[in-house]
Length: 228
Image: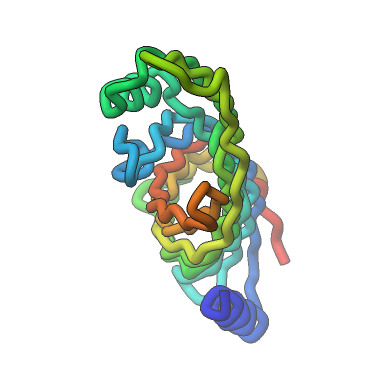
């Protein structure tokens, strides 16, 4: 968390001293795709997540020549593949005949910022690349499991939500077309990664489940240009 605060103070200081000339407001909505361990069907390390919704508000500003700064905050929802999760639980438990699972999605709130570099390869077209650092506020889903055992067992059990703050980092890419001087339409993507520790109370006491969270957000964005 200290690194996140230092990161934000550093870039706010740069922004204040560089006297920016133009700012932009990015209204994004699109698809969020879980990747790597976060999407895997592994009971120990995976989260069984599927592609879901992303919505983001981003602010960007010119600083010096082609360099600028961006700050963004967004929400990502990733549904759980309960069919595959149930299959893996039955496959690994010899006493479990079947299980029905109802699950909420994983919820990720992210706040990030960093430097950007922009150029215009063609008239009315701009490309921007950014490096991002910030924080995730991640929530695991509430789940209701109704198992059917070979012999005796509980009729149902619940897995309650756990939350964690974690440092996040990544990169972004944007391709924008100027409809007018004030309105641009853009295709924007962010690749973000973090490692969160979710705490649960079990029969043996408090345990922490560590999960790598990696996602690719692909969004259609309306960009509003705001001159200073």
